[in-house]
Length: 62
Image 1 (cartoon, helix red, strand yellow):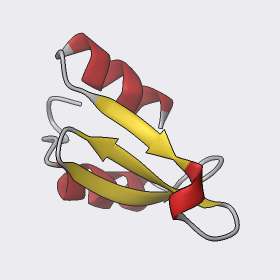
Image 2 (tube, rainbow, N blue to C red; image 1 turned 90 degrees about the horizontal axis):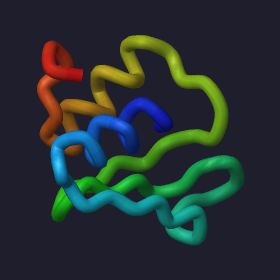
Image 3 (tube, helix red, strand yellow; image 1 turned 30 degrees about the horizontal axis):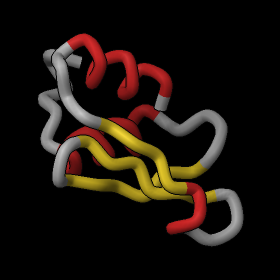
């Protein structure tokens, strides 16, 4: 999630994280109008690519 925040800031995209929009150790990460549900802590590489696809970030740019 840190990398996604840095990417959004560097590209001038609006982002936010809403922990109240998830259950347990999950929350919702928004970039502009798109969102994905993420887990706190480390995530696997395939999960990262799925998350990027959901919020519209090309994984090659990331």
